[in-house]
Length: 295
Length: 259
Ligand SMILES: Nc1ncnc2c1ncn2[C@@H]1O[C@H](COP(=O)(O)OP(=O)(O)OP(=O)(O)O)[C@@H](O)[C@H]1O
Ligand SMILES: [Mg+2]
Image 1 (cartoon, rainbow over the protein chains, first blue to last red):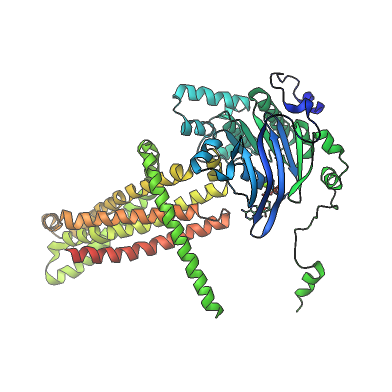
Image 2 (spheres, rainbow over the protein chains, first blue to last red):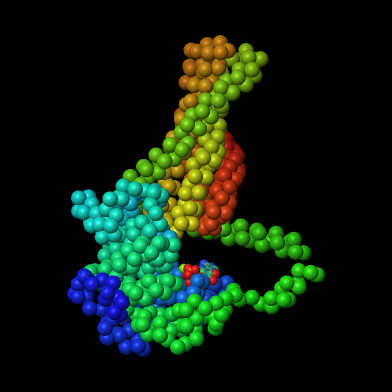
């Protein structure tokens, strides 16, 4: 919590998030995303096994977990790109898996997903990329559209890069452009999928600061999915730890970092051995597998 | 036993894919309704297809016309009918070679490019990103490309035939000494608008639908990896070419019995 305050001393106090009063059991306040006992099965392999979590409105919530534990899958479930094998997913009171296509699209206008790769349109310039959602969803006159786009680009510090093509951007710049595009429709919620991966420390800091500022100035509920423990803990109000297809730890970042659970410890300290197996699950034993080739 | 089971499985999966392609076409066709308000999107794509294919169409058309001039003259001169060279060149081009060769070139040039473009958009999550922005990629990406292909194909075929006739003229009149007046007048009186020209236009319209449909479906259905996109691009060219030749035979026999 304190770490977060230090990170953005200039942040307006207009937006009081649930941060200060969070009890260790559950995040307080109005719940925007409610995931209940979700199971997800890909071709016979259970990726999620009864995962439940709540995201309070107006907060920054971290979802951390090892590679391949189903974080991106969870984002896709919340965004309605996948349907769960079992369980409920409520966003703003609506059950996402049961929505019709147009209802889902209406909901998606109010939430944004920042892809791991940025997913900028390679045939459009930076400016046009950011303008894309506005052009698609509104009939805003060109002069106003231009102002809106330039304001969002200024927010991410790339107003000067408006005429570049995505191929001319660095990874960090591309992610900032994607961020500008995500906020251009002023969504109620943004899901960031691994916003820090592959960035240098400075770019990481810039992205982290942006996530925090957007949350405070626009009141956007943010979900940060990451395996970058340090950076994520610094900016989040509440953290969930995913492992073994379910939530294995939760609380304020400080609480999670102090947790005594073996599972949580292994992840937070980056230990190779522990309850989370390093090996992708197999049916045959290691020796049997090696010997099998001889016959 | 296993081989038969495999064969059945391949057949079934092919059938399933065909069904999916059909549904996809229906969905795209429904999506074209929204294009009425957004015609610039279509024109942009027509332009893209045109830029890709124009040069190869013009060059090929010229050579095909010149070859027709040579071969036609060689045959006709045996019967003293070399004055009909213009008619022969024009009919071959307008009824048959124009639409077919254009479609084959289109599949190789524009079709493969379409598949690769859409497949890469899928592989780099641009399609998924669009969906998450509440924009339907079928309406925004696929529909304009399908319509553009259908518009572009007859135009390209017409250009191919026109330049082919010029090529035939170049060889027949310029090189082999056929009378220019006879070349043009026989063509003018012999080529029927309804029967010849329109049947050619009809063919290229159908080829436009089929080639673009295959191209956009292969791209949209591609496995989103570089390998998957390469395979899909390959499929586009092979399937389009086979489809064009088969449909050409069917359409020709139908159109001829009608006459
Ligand atoms: N479409 C799919 N089909 C089959 N299996 C899938 C699919 N998507 C994901 N998986 C499997 O689900 C598991 C979780 O994948 P996911 O992408 O959600 O992991 P992640 O937590 O985001 O990992 P990372 O941190 O590496 O991004 C993986 O083991 C993957 O093999
Ligand atoms: Mg992921």
